[in-house]
Every structure is written in structure tokens, then in C-alpha cells.
Length: 118
Image (tube, rainbow, N blue to C red; front, top):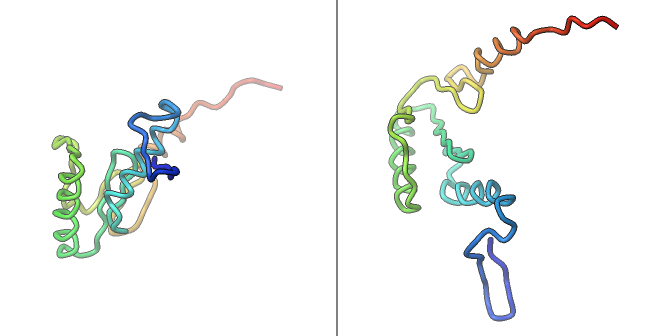
């Protein structure tokens, strides 16, 4: 968060409004790091979308390089590389498009109905 002042631009060294503004500031930072429209960060989840292997091979090194420049670290155990289908934010992304995650749908279908009578 930067502010213009009488003697130049200033930025806070701490969050001025406590943790209330932390998610917004983190997302802004991720959006600045990954400006490419095919690289989609949502907080600490990043999805790369490409229809061709060549494009994917361009995006992946770019993503890793941007992370290195920003001193971001990835959990190798959570990474899914070169997949044709992935679960992302409660949806399944594939070459068929975006569909709701079947696990989420099942949870809704199995939700207990009320047995209260009016």
C-alpha cells in the first residue's frame, strides 16, 4: 500500500489496519507478480491455463522465474504439473471446460433435510 505525500511516495512497513487488509494486500501483490492473463493466482493457489503444450512450456518457467524474483516458495508435494484436469477452488478445470467438483456436489446432495413439521 503506497501513499503520495508532500515529500514523495511512501509505503507502510506494517499493515496500517492490522490483519483486516492482509488478504487484499496479498492478492494485489500476487496479481502484480503474475500479470500474464494465462497465469491465475488466487491467494496462494496459482493455475496456469493453456491449450497447447508449447504454451504451457512457456508459462511454467515464467511462473517459476516470477516466484523466484518475488522470493516465493512452492510446496513441491502440492504442485500438479502438466495435468489435463485439476481441482482448483472447488471446480474441475479440464479441456472440457470448468465443472463443479463432484465431491462438492455430493456433499450438497447428502446434506440432511429438515424433519421439522410446521
